[in-house]
Image (cartoon, rainbow, N blue to C red; front, side, top):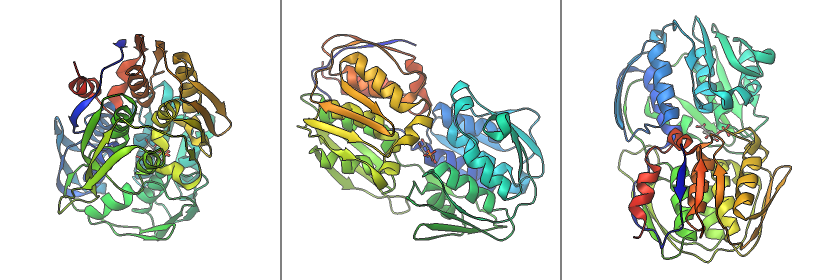
Length: 429
Ligand code: S3P
């Protein structure tokens, strides 16, 4: 799909961004492993989370989805059955990595594969610790890449220090640990998103976080519950950036998840001098904090982004790079090598596509250097099939005086199916 976007006079209004992708995946997974009927509201009906639903249906779980409302008829983890066919994870790294952990303890064989992007993404990071726990996993190049075939069975608990800051790897090990013999502890050098920890507790799971060590006991059974998914701060980030860089704008983002392992983008906006207010509005039974964020056109200044904030904003770095093109001074992003193994190599795709629009941006070994403030012009760009690159470029187009043609815009459906509808509602005619 091709999309033409031109500059706008301003963005005004309120947006309720769709449900959080990470939490939506986990609600389906825990609901499928729990006993009883789980109800999920504000579920993200984007392609990635729909892949997770499709995989669990193949494992015999009854799941009814009506837009953003989902019910999962859980029969306990032992109620999961072997699939007749390969499980297709589509574009979703979270699906394949977390499901690898769950499937490692189940007494049957499953093959998982996904699209071209998934085929290039590293799987050793989950395969290696799961093998250490006793899982038998085969895959292309000895499990480095998909397809992965997992023969589950009896696992033993391990203590594992994460070599990369990855919530997907942490979660895969903890999910396997729930069914393993003994205790499983994951130690993270840098804190990553902790939704597995928070959502597991909603399902009655016992999980202990002690500093940077997270421990589960094996042999736990989970109970069904109700989950209302907060708005996804990673989706809100595109409108926060748009509000800050498009002239004559004020945007209010409603009911956005404010889990502090995800709010690095808000710290960066503050450091860059954005005109922004945050009002916490927690629902009484919410698993995670939520709030409304209002942002207006801002005079941004450059910043440095590195170290322990990186995992708290890893998915927001493409849109932060765009904001940096509109900030006074030089922004340096470093310690962000993980960008290379996302849906695309996001150092390369951000630098190439923003350069095409006129940005002064160069790639480094572990990030990028962006000089601002530059005026972006217009032209032809592509998402390379990466939803976050697509949305970043659509926001960039709003400040280009000439037309921008965005190729492969349909990739945006992975995490924000109604992105363009919301954008059009904000546009001042
Ligand atoms: C996710 C964790 C992050 C993030 C991804 C979702 C999750 O990946 O980039 O979009 O739901 O656990 P890593 O854990 O590989 O950094």
